[in-house]
Structures are given as C-alpha cells and as structure tokens.
Length: 336
Ligand SMILES: Nc1ncnc2c1ncn2[C@@H]1O[C@H](COP(=O)(O)OP(=O)(O)OP(=O)(O)O)[C@@H](O)[C@H]1O
Ligand SMILES: Cc1ncc(C[n+]2csc(CCOP(=O)(O)O)c2C)c(N)n1
Ligand SMILES: [Mg+2]
Ligand SMILES: [Mg+2]
Ligand SMILES: [Mg+2]
Image 1: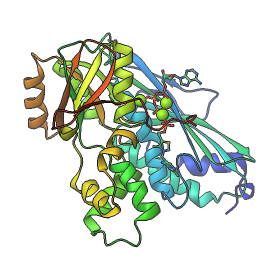
Image 2: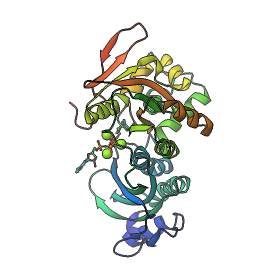
Image 3: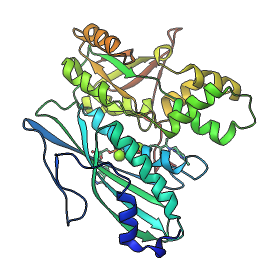
Image 4: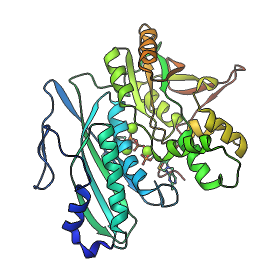
C-alpha cells in the first residue's frame, strides 16, 4: 500500500498501533502537541540523538525492516547505556520517499516495539515528512541516571585498567558476510551470529547499570565507530594514554573463523569496523577485581584489555612486545 492511500494521519495511526501501551511515566503520550513525561526523583535526564540514513547506515539488502526498527533504537539505547543510565522515552522522526510501502513501515514499527519491550522504553512521539531524498530515521532517546553518577568519557586516570564488554568486530564481519560471503562455505551458526551482530545489536544497558552500581568504573563509551575511535575519545577527553594488548581484545570465534575464510585480519574489524554497541571504558584498579566478580556472577562478559598511563593517544601492544600508535581511524562520516 502507498502512503497517499491513507495519508499522513492514517500512517501515524497504523504505526503507533503497533507500539506497546505507555506506562505511568508517560503523562501525555502520542496525540497532543508535545509529550509530558515524569522521571524518578533523585535522577537526571540523559538525552541522545542519532540518525540512520538509507545508503549510509542500511540498505534493503543489508537489513530487513523489522531488524532496522530494532536497530534504530538500539543504537541510541547504547548511548544511554554508556552513560550508566536507563532508557525511558523515545521520539522517532521519519523522512519518507513517497513510494515506500506502508507494509515496510509497519514492519519497522514491529521492530521498534520489540526493542522497546526488551529495554522498557516507550515511544512518546515523532514526526513524518516526505522527501525526494533517501529514507531517514531519526531517533531521540531520553533516559534517566542517578544524580551525579553518569559515566563519562573524560574521567579515566593513569593507573586504571581498560575493559570492554562482550566481543567486538562482529557487526563489521556481518556486513562483510552480507556483501561478500554468499559463495563461501559458512556454517549456519557462524552466519546466524554475524547477521545478528550487524542487524540486531543488543545495547549493554545491564552492563552499564552494573558498572555504575559497582562504583569502580572511571569512564565509559559505547562502540559505534570502532574500538580505535572510542579508545581515542576516552584518551583525548581524559587527557591520558591508553595501552591496549592486541591479543586481549575479545572477538567471537564466528568472526575469527569467517575472517580466516575471507583472508582478513579480524582485528581490523574489531578496531576499525564499528556498530558493535558494546561498552569500553576504564576501571579503578582497586575495584577491578570486584567488578569482574560481579560481571561473572551476572553472566555479563567483560574483558580487561589494557591500562591507562600518563600521556595522550592509544598504543596497541603486540604479544612480541612491539607497539604501534592507533589513530582514531574508524567509521567517520566525513573522512576522505
Ligand atoms: N549537529 C550537532 N549539533 C550539536 N551537537 C552535536 C551535533 N552532532 C553531534 N553533536 C554532539 O557531539 C558529541 C559527539 O557526538 P557523536 O555522534 O560522535 O557521539 P555518539 O553518538 O556517541 O557516536 P555515534 O554517532 O557514532 O553513535 C555528542 O555530545 C553529540 O551530542
Ligand atoms: C549499507 C551500509 N554501509 C556501511 C555500514 C557501516 N556503517 C555505517 S555508519 C557506521 C558507524 C556508526 O554510525 P554513526 O557514526 O552515524 O552512529 C558504520 C560502521 C552500514 N551499517 N551499512
Ligand atoms: Mg551520534
Ligand atoms: Mg556513543
Ligand atoms: Mg559515529
């Protein structure tokens, strides 16, 4: 069905019908000039916004519409997670080419509902406009964090240990698989994992909450542009140098085995690929053991990959003792 058959308001009705009912934090939800929301006492509001543009962040052959809906919010939930917060309310704006099928947008909103249910988040509004350009999805997400407790990029200190949650490189491996992997003999387990990493990333809200609660996390960032870029952000904003051991960087065996089939180094995907939406940051060395025990007890993977020293920049250390500078190369929208 074409959008002109139901009009702007018909479309909004059809899409918002797919969402979960609001909770008591939504005082005024979808339907009025603006939404009114309540946040828990003793908390600050955490706000983040990101756009996804067809041709830049996705194509119809790289992701299905329902996963795209899921991922559109997941990338913003990840930013709230990196602040140690809880996601609460989302605003979604769509710039729509007139020829786009309503059924595609309905599927997109099923994915939005899936991720909202999984992360206890409510869509409280949005906007729809037509465009002669590409399909654009813009998401603004509001969350909450205990007053004065947000995890920052700017507070790592010499002596701290560097950690990363989960595994990295899987999303870039997944995109490579979609674009180049079809003729290769890849096991279903491997392709399932790689596709999931790229199409259905799971933002690390629980990890962020435990990092905050532990009192041992001295800085955090989420991995959108690649580990190299995110580590450099922490180094720059904290005025320190991070020294990372290459062989400690956690990569899933699916990404490692697929890289071998492609004749690629999986470390390049981990460092420069991006869209992993894991958390990277630093721990107070006196509390790092407790944080590791806590994460083990909660079944949340966390790996120590390096340490913080005086200076500026990021060093990648190899097992043979060799060291090289890792520039903030990664996904950069305006790189040459
Ligand atoms: N057009 C803009 N106007 C004002 N601030 C901006 C603009 N674009 C980005 N920023 C701000 O710059 C900072 C860094 O943004 P950036 O988008 O690099 O971080 P991120 O969202 O964590 O990364 P990514 O977009 O790769 O997921 C954020 O505080 C962001 O709000
Ligand atoms: C079709 C297609 N081509 C390339 C990519 C890879 N990609 C796009 S944006 C980005 C960084 C995160 O975005 P941002 O910095 O805007 O948050 C990455 C790694 C993709 N996902 N789909
Ligand atoms: Mg951003
Ligand atoms: Mg971020
Ligand atoms: Mg980016």
